[in-house]
Amino acid sequence: MTSQILTGINRHFTLSEIFESEEYVICDSSAEKSMIDEISSAKTFSDLPDYLLSTQLKYSERFIDLLGNRNLLTTQGVSRELRDSRDIIGRNLHYLSLMSKHLNGNRKKHMHNGENKKEMLADIQELHHLAYELSKKKAFSPRNRQIYKFLERIVMAVTEVTDAKIDYGNLYFLQKQKSIKRDFHTDEQLVTSAIYLSCTECKHGGILTRDSDIKRILRNTVFYLDHSSSADYREIVNMVTKNPVKVYRAEGMNDARLNGDSSWPGSLEISRIVSQQRISLIDKMLSY
Image (cartoon, rainbow, N blue to C red; front, top):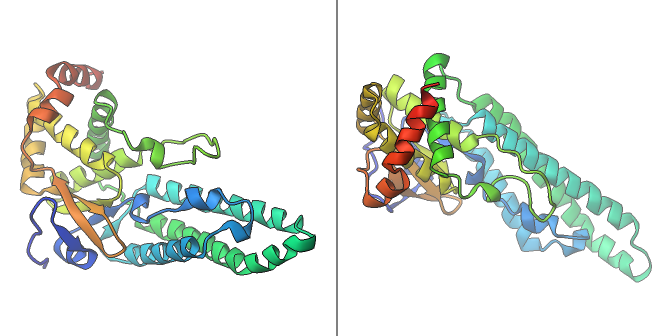
């Protein structure tokens, strides 16, 4: 038995309130605040600020706690992102260890001062590995793959045609390292999974994230479904209105803001983004 449903757009709730209220919470990797950019800019262990490492440790430990909630889910894309974050930290750890071997003379004191920071960075890598392993066990697996794939095609098409992934560059590999960004389509998996649970299992729930793309993808998808010429989508709209999918934007270690849900009516702004021309284009893509 769940407690009363949380309401009020832009209201803040504790994570405990969210997990007690929702029948499921799908979490993406951005729910763990990442400071990998700052960590990767260091040339020696001594360059790493104490506050940076201690703060990252706290967020990583909190993320492990979140993954332990019984009604929390992830997706395969979330696991892959966590795996890549673990590997990035591992490469940084290896690079900084090599650099420390070249320190000599007066700089030896920096190597000594950096030993504790090396241990902290190794702990952060270990926590990311643990998060990766736990997230694999929590990855959502739909009972009906055919329905899931049907919904996923819709979400993917809407995302592409409406250019909904604005935050994409902030989610994956570091631009400073000039790494190739890999899109695991995690955002689309999150939204597809939530819509699937709403439609096929009649569950209300939420997506916990720091990524603004999630709200955009969900909003644009529901608007498309509501305005498409296909009558097949009417029941989907009815179900996501009856069993709303909420988007909670994580803002601290223990709280999040209700940022939107699938029962919102279409606005003038959305109608400009998901224009009739784009709706027709999506219809055409899905007809093949």
